[in-house]
Length: 361
Ligand SMILES: Cc1ncc(COP(=O)(O)O)c(C=O)c1O
Image (cartoon, rainbow, N blue to C red; front, side, top):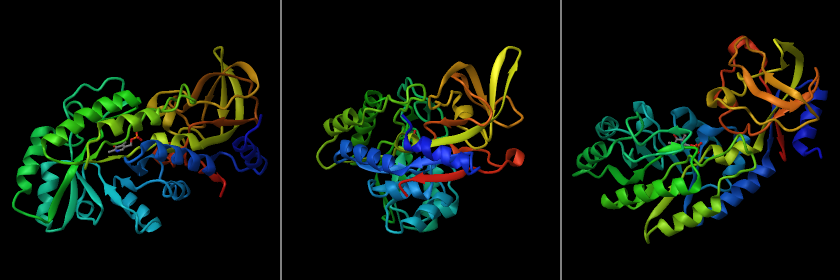
C-alpha cells in the first residue's frame, strides 16, 4: 500500500524536486496529542534543537506548554513565531546577551554563569542544571553521570544556592536535569526518582527532567512508552511539585522522511551500491549516530548500500538494504524528522539544498 508520504515523494520526483524532506503534519499533531495526554499534569516543553522548522513548531505549539531553546538564535526564532509562549533557555556557554535575555526560565549551567547573571543586574527565574553522579546505563548519549561540561555537580549547585542568598532579582525556581538521551521509560523514571530526591533535599519543587526519550532507528515501530512514563511520573510526583519534561527527538522524528532518487547503481569489489541525490549533508543523522537510516520498504532485491553524492566514505545512509534499486527510483528514508537537516553540513560540496514539503498544510 502506498501511503501519502510516498505519493508526495513520487509527485516531487515527477516534478524534478527531489531530494526533499516530506513532513506529515497531521501525524505529528496526533502523536503530540497522544504524548500530551499520557503526561497528565507533567508540563511538556519541546526541545527546539531537534527540529526548529516553523511548520512543525506551529503544530507542536497546540500541545506543548512551552519551548526549550539552546541559543539566542533559537530564542529569536521561537519568539518571533509565538510571542506569548513560555520559553526556557538552556545550554552550556551562554553569552552575556543570552544570559540576560528575558525568558520564562533560564537554566543556569555553572557558578560562573550565575556570577555573570547577578553582575548584570537583570531579573531572572532560574533552574540550576545539575549533573548527578549516578550510573546511566544504556544511553545513546550521556550528558550527566560523570565529568561532562553540562550543568554542575552538586558542589557547584551548592555554591550557586549560597551565592543567591540575600538578593531577590535572580529567583531560584528549581532544578533542571537532562542527564542522557536514548533511554526507555523505566530508565528515565529511575533517573527521575534520583533527581527528585535531590531537589527535595534542596527544598525545591520545580523540576525539569529533560528529554532523552528513546527512539529506535532499527525498529521504527518500537515507540517510547509514554503511558508508562506518564504513570510513573504521576506516582513519583508529590503534592505541590511541578514536573516538566523537554523531549526533542521522540516528538518529531517520526513525522519526517527524506525522499531522494537513485542516480547510479554500481558494484565495486562485489558490493552493490546505490548512489542517491543528496546525502549526509542533508541528513547527517546516520553519520552522527553511526546507524543505518531506516528505508521505506520497496520491491525486494539483492542487498544494496545506499550512499550520497559526497566524496567521503562517511556519506553512507543505509547499508545492505534488501531492496531492488535502479537509476531513477525513489528512495525514502524514514525517521528523518529530528536532528536531520538542521544538524547537517548543508554547503559541503555546494549541492542543491532539498525541498521541504508538508502534508496537511
Ligand atoms: C538540555 C537538553 N534538553 C533536551 C534535549 C532533547 O533531547 P532528546 O532530543 O534526546 O529528547 C537535549 C538534547 O541534547 C538537551 O541537551
